[in-house]
Amino acid sequence: MKHLLSLEKLPRADFENIIRDAATFKRERGQHQTRPLAGQTWAMIFSKSSTRTRVSFEVGIRELGGDVMFLNANDIQLGRGEPIKDTARVLGRMIHGAVIRTYAQRDVEEFAEFAKIPTINALTDDEHPCQVLTDIATFEELRGPIAGKVVTFIGDGACNMPVSWIFAAAKLGFELRIAAPKEFQPAAEILQRAGGKLLCTEDLKAAATGADLLYTDVWVSMGKEAEAAGRIKVLTGYQINAPLVKLAKPGALVMHCLPAYRGKEIDAETFEAHANTIFTQAENRLHTQKAILNWAVS
Image (cartoon, rainbow, N blue to C red; front, side):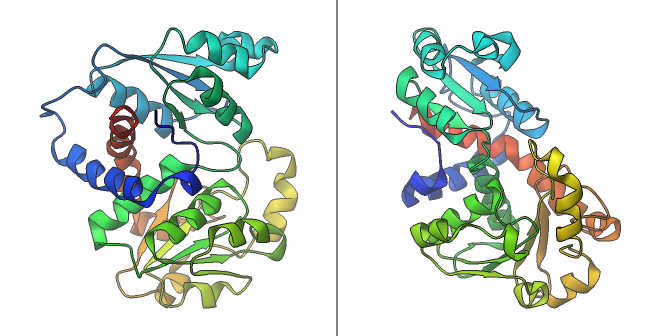
């Protein structure tokens, strides 16, 4: 049985297969010869709101032949304090797979342990594996293999996105640079666990120089709203803008996992100049989710 809980635990061969299959699902959309989820019902259990993750998984499950039900925390007994393991043991006897978007990484892991059905981490505070798989699939669609390239993440380097990038870099052999204030850099323990070619620095210009991809995310992630003022104060200046893009390689890609707050992590002019890449990245959530679902049941 397969689960996608963390990129740290995903074997390199599976990593590469999902990225390859995402391209196939995109190319063959509407012409699928098989329906790997036919006769299956999958639950989407979301404690955090979503646009791209929810829509891409719901459409993807249906296009692969399955049925889908959407459950937020208030729809089920989790919202009234039922333990995760009890909910998991009930649902595991009724459904065929689960896509979970929540706060604690342990909740997803515990669900997978007790439900004994394929379980996909659609975002936790620790990691966002589906997004980074999509991002790499998008890079390779537009620029070829990511191995040997330089990816620069700018902003909150301790949130779930850069952590998933850290594990991806070690698996796929590209250099990852994280430009962030000292208090927003990833934990040393994570860097040591991952290995690979990694650089964490406060020097934004040095991190961007010669990069193949400049990447950013919101400064205030879901669940961090109470810290907004302090975060914005410290992170101001860690922005993708035209002068920074000029330091990267000619033709470097600019990506954002959305939603974007123009004037903060990226300026409006740069966002619009790279909008085609950013919305191709968003579209590719669908194709990559289908590849993940197909992998989970194969």
